[in-house]
Length: 272
Image 1 (cartoon, rainbow, N blue to C red):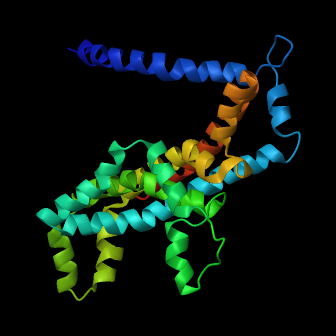
Image 2: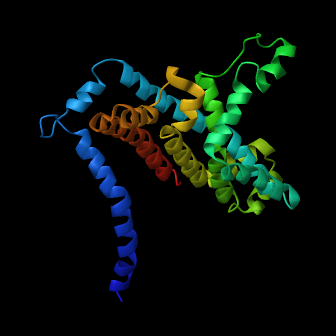
Image 3: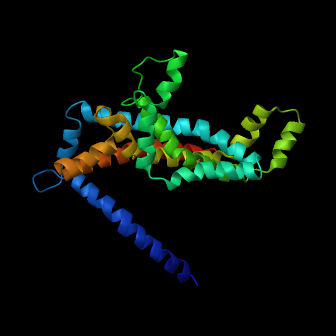
């Protein structure tokens, strides 16, 4: 009987080893290629030879953090509204959230090029109000990248938080309101603490996806605002410098783990 769990785990473990562990190990081997046939830190020395790549790395993490905060600010209230709504309202909101996931990220990003570009929908809406100039554009700006990535990744946050909020007993909210707590106090003291596991999971998921995204930052930010994932893509497909691309990918992995692991540990310490 004790062998049955091991046999059940054998298939998934072999699958993860073949499709995740081995590729990551190969990337690490390439990253520590010393250039003389042996291991070394030559590729990482190239990364920090000037300020360009550290700035790209910092921009990548900053954009991922801003996107995570934006999706949390929009996704948590949206998930609560979906939780409290019923019937066709909840069904309609679910369709609105899920439907974009059935569309390619490239197509959605091209839509944002039309909205954020010079003479686009956003400029035409704000110009009559004298809020922007004639040549207003959010293309090739960090704000444009955050807006586009927030729309792309919002479903992951909203659906993850909704799954956690749905497990919160409504009688606890009613008890808090009966004891004199207002709506915001009930949300802050009852709903959000109980939904913390979903908030932590959604934040980690969105941050990981945002940090490794390159299609949306590449199309919206262009060559003026490169990110690490886009730099890796350029090295692999453009210059064919695989060891240097592997070093950049390793740097991205390390930076992401430096954010994800303490956040996950903090969430676990607080019961998430």
